[in-house]
Structures are given as C-alpha cells and as structure tokens.
Image (tube, rainbow, N blue to C red; front, side):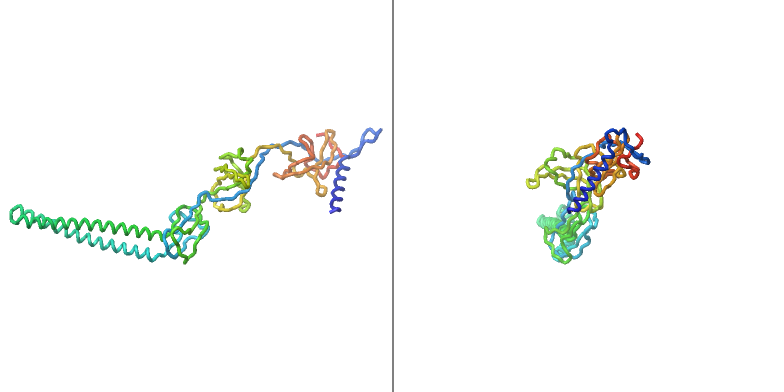
Length: 370
C-alpha cells in the first residue's frame, strides 16, 4: 500500500514538474521551445444534456386472470404448460367427475322419457278432441243425452290438462339437462382471455374443489411498478415518457407513466409509479427493471477520448495557451458517451486543447497559433 501511494505521489509530482515548462531566468529575453507539428486543436464547449433520476422496479402484467375450478373431480388431462400462449376459450385442463357425468346422463334420459310422455299425451288429446267433436254433433242432433255429452267433454278437458302437464314436464327435464350439461362443461377448464400461462397450480391426478386455483393467465400487456423517492412526487406526472432498461433481456425501451399511487410508504418514504410498456413478447412478470425519469437539463463539458493522455492511473489533456504554448494538465473524468468523456474538473469551457496527434505533443512545446 505504501509503495502504491509513493508511486502515485511520484506521478503527480511528475505532472506538476512537466506542467511548469521552462521558466525564464532573470535577464533572459526568451526560452527556446520545441516546435510541435502534426497536431490538431479544438476549443472546448459545454453540451446541454438531459439529467435523469434512476429507480429500480419490477415488470408486472397489467391484467392477470386467476382460473379456478367450479366443480369437484380428478384432473384427467392437462393441455396447457407454463409459458404457452393461449386464446380465449382454449381448453387448459379436463376434470373427471363421475357424479356430474351420471347426472348429465340421467338428465338426458329424463328428457327422452318426458318427450315420449308428451307424444302419448298429444295423441290422447287429439283422440279426445276428435271424439268430442263427433259427440258434439250427435248432442246437437239430440242423438245422445246431455249426461253422455258431459262425460265426453270431461274426458277431453282431462286429456288437454294431461298434455299441458306433459309439456311442462318436458320443459323441466330440458332445464335440468341444460343445468347438468353446464356442470359437465365446468369439467373443461378454458382460458378466459388471450394471454400467456404464467403459472400452473395443480398436477394430473390431483383433486379439484370449487374455488381451488388452477392457472394464472397473464394478458400480454405489461408495466413496470417502481418506487420513487417522495421528494419527486411533485415532478412526476401521468403521461411522462421515461427510459426503461431490462438487463436480463439486454433491452432498452421507453414507457409512459400510466398511474401514480401518491400514498407515501412510511417505511421506504417512496410512492409508486406504474409505467406502461409497449407490447413485447419477451416481457415476463417479475423481471427486474431500471427506470430513468427526466430530471431537468445541465451543461456538461466533454472531450474526445483521443484528447486524453494517461500517466499511470492519472488522466490529462494538452492545453494550448493563446501564445501556442502546450501544457499537460491533470483532469478528473466522469462518464463515457459516444466516444467522448465527461470532464469533471481541471478544464474549463473555451480553453483550447489538442484533440489529435497527442503522441507528437510535448509539454512546454509550442505550436503555431490556430
């Protein structure tokens, strides 16, 4: 450690010594400086750029459907696996329920019997109607007594009533069959939406009970839920465009603030912003994401990477004064952007530096005025 510190101090001293150049002694008129050629210079300028506030969040499905069982039975067949894309109405799972199947079979048989009963009642009604009409004519011709005619009329009314009862019996049987078929339909579990199977919660051979969860289906519309520091509550607005980075997918995309939950979490001192994402088949619930919120603009000084020279772990640039004299100056660098490097300290706007041909530059040398 001591040797490393000594080395750094030596390099700093070297910068300071070489940066001084040759000094004019008392009585001397000028200093002979080596002429430097093959270099190009440029005046530094500030660049206005956007500043971002970054926060970490989680990708979540905007709409999630929990598919549950409605009947009791044994899982006979599973037709959908996790990550499968499904459409609304696709069968995900089949349940075997002997009770429901027996009930449906009995309901179908009852409909058949009621139908037969209606046919018999209808034939009897028609026969009694015909008999009634024939005896009505005889009664009008005074060929039969009123008592005989009343008996025939009563038989017709009974036949009509039996026919109406048979119709109602068939209607009830049909309703029971529809109900039984509906319950039988519950043995086929279907997807309620177009989406992706995010999770399966049951295996083949297991027993289902009404309300037990079977699948989680995610609709392919995702967002990022991100906690933001409470101090930025007034600066985030619905509709703001943000940058979203998902490292797992090596993806950089944009999103918009779709919802802001302004309640402050007392433990984390944050509020939640929900960022709507563009549809992409690569998104999955639970992915880690970084969100960059615009936080204003600032002026930054950048230089080309080729302008920098290295001395051990230190960085510097060759600065050219108005007289064309070159001086190697130590600078502190920041982030890299498009083959340019941010200068945090050591250099000011408007100074002229060597931007190419630094290998030809000599500290204390001189170039022609540009």
